[in-house]
Every structure is written in structure tokens, then in C-alpha cells.
Amino acid sequence: KQLAAGKGHANSDNNLKSNSTAQESRCTERKQEVRAAQAGVEEAGNETRNAQEITRKTKKKLEHTKRDLRTAKKEIQKLKAKLRHLSGQLSDATGRRKAAEKTSQALAARSAKQKTKLSYMARELKEKEAALRQASASGISAA
Image 1 (cartoon, rainbow, N blue to C red):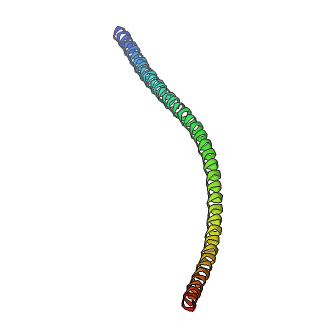
Image 2: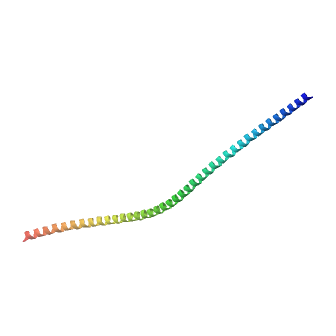
Image 3: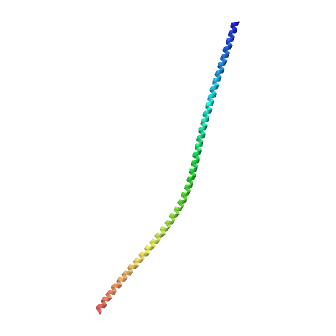
């Protein structure tokens, strides 16, 4: 009986040891799960921080781009106004040039008329001069 009792006691020890080992094993598994979960949380936190940093930089770039766009729009408005002004000046200058061309043509036509008139007058003078010389030569020879 004692041997049987001793064996039973040994069995009970083995059962306790195996229960303890099983608990340790489960505990180790849980610890590993917790570590894995903590690593996952830490990685998610890093990803979140990275995403927030990217978002912040993107917002900053967007603000710079918006500011550049506003500046460009103002510059375009200035250039459009300048273009309108220069276009008006060009139109005025073209008008003045055309008027000057007309005046020049009118002056050239008047000048041509006057040249023709002067050439007729010069011819008449030469004819009168020749007639006077002839008359004076005839008058001298008649005297």
C-alpha cells in the first residue's frame, strides 16, 4: 500500500509539474502575443507619425503653391493692363502714321502740281525772253 501510495504521490507531482509547464507555456505564448501586439502598436504609431509629417509637409507645399498662384494671378493682371495700354498706344501710333502718310501723299501731289506749274512758267518766260531778244534784235537792226 505504501508503494502504491508513494506512486500516487509521484503521479500527483508529475501532474503538478505538467500543469505548471503548461501554464508557463501559455504564459510565454501570452507574453509573445503581448510583445507582438506592442510592436504592432509601435509600428502603427510610427506610421501615423510619418503620415502626419507627410500631411504637414504637403499642407505647407499647398500653401506655398496657393501663394505663388495668387502672385502669378496678380502679375497676369498687371501684364494684361500693360498690354491694353501698349495696344492703345500702338493703335494711336498707327493712326498717326496713316495720317502722316496721307499728309505726305497730299504734299507730294501738291509739290508735283507746283513743279508742273513752275515748268510751264519757266517755259513761258523762256519764250517771252526769246521773243524780247528777237524784238530787240529786230528793233536794233531796223534802227
